[in-house]
Length: 232
Image (cartoon, rainbow, N blue to C red; front, side, top):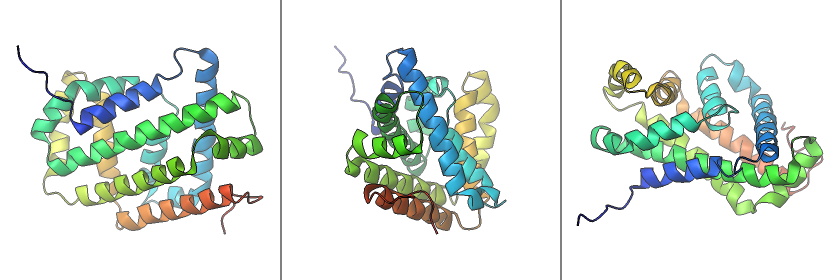
């Protein structure tokens, strides 16, 4: 009898992210609460980083984070695509590209877990004060700090990945085969992230700016600052 191989780190992270997204168990109330929370967070992030969003150099990268990692749209098809193609990806993609995707899914899973914990406390209707309290109560501070560590790691990986020769051309060549294989959502995710960082002049500086601001907000939230999101 053939022994079943252990899942790779990428496959493990993909499964974790999918399961976290399914944590509402089909409960309409929890699903609505999660959607309301994601909408709030996306708007808050857009406001905090409005200067980066307005900058032509970094606009696409901000939108990638807002849509693909903090967005409100249904990612179940992307989850399915990634899990289906993961074994092939591990054969054809370079190690650093696989590492970047794995880090994205690790961040994805943690963000979904944090969102579910907060949504259970908040419900679908809440204000900023409710959000701030739930932020502190839903999970441990270490989980929040770990989330920012993962954002930093993912941003750094993307900054390095765009320097890999011919990788962009490989992604472009994958467009038609991906569509034919029903993997269009996955292709868009990979190419969008790569292209957004490739066009920036200083991608590492962009990542450092976002993480620095978010760490400052984290500190202010736990210090019970009266206006934690209003950075100088």
